[in-house]
Length: 462
Image (cartoon, rainbow, N blue to C red):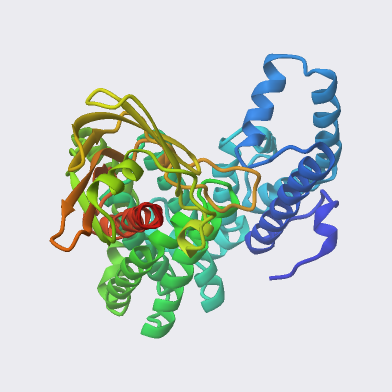
């Protein structure tokens, strides 16, 4: 693969798919970060990958204000050299692939240009096709031509194609279907590891160790891609990583077994096509079924060296808690700040204020000083995501982890102390339930402890 700086301004000649992919990824990374830095430091605005589409729609519908005019004019001026380089590279790649040069207009088409770029990165040159004398419909021969024989080239091809599939499938599931189910967290990582290793070992069997390394890199880079395009935050990616990496390695191991057999290449076209359709089809089926999430329970208890009557006063409403020291809350998980109540009987409304907003809790049972039970009608965001951008708001922050109710149960102990139990009933719409319940139970238990220990301290001091 020969990389020449003159590729960026010379429109004559051709360019191979390897250098085309290199320059495309590099220019996008530089352009995106330049826009982000200019937006932040000069105009105090955030910028994400989705803002390119929003900016185009905004400028198409209406004339910008004076402030917006300066902002968008600056971004347009910054884009001109990248625009020239993109057009030049696309023209040379079209010429190399033997395609009509007028297709360069697709470079300017929103969304379509991403598919267009991926196709140009895959297609072999016209000369390569002539040298191989491929017959029409020879899918096996085309795959042999498209996938590089070099181990590094085949590895990069496998990772690149799999990342395109992963980002598209994640967008479909999370943004369009609003599903965080088995297809996204189990099926997609398996397919990613499977496809990347099959492409890597297409021309000759590879060692198990290198196959697992390719599967691992694919999963990690997919997470990094979701972070860089402002689709997800770091906290949720870290939570999903153990599950995704484990299943991705399993997919890579299965592909290792298949690629070591000679028979599979005769059916490689059907195999690749089938696997590519599995993710979107299964996501659509999962969305149509819309399974009901189970109601989960978390109970936490502390013992307080005070009478229930004293503890009850601090349970119903409590003063502001000190700033958190727990690592879980310091990284962005929502934590309780204080509690307020309006009324003193069933029907009263309690507000438990968190760092991201307030839980609204109508009281259902007021049995002082024994039981305070409430439902939850409003849930704030469960966390503030870590992100390199000013803000990121993935769909799972709304409606995918919901508290349905809770209670405080005070049990009088013989020695004048009180056993204080806090219970939360909740559900989450993320599958597999058992995996995400480990995280949610752990988080809710820590939230309970923060509140119960504060009530304990206030009561014992009183």
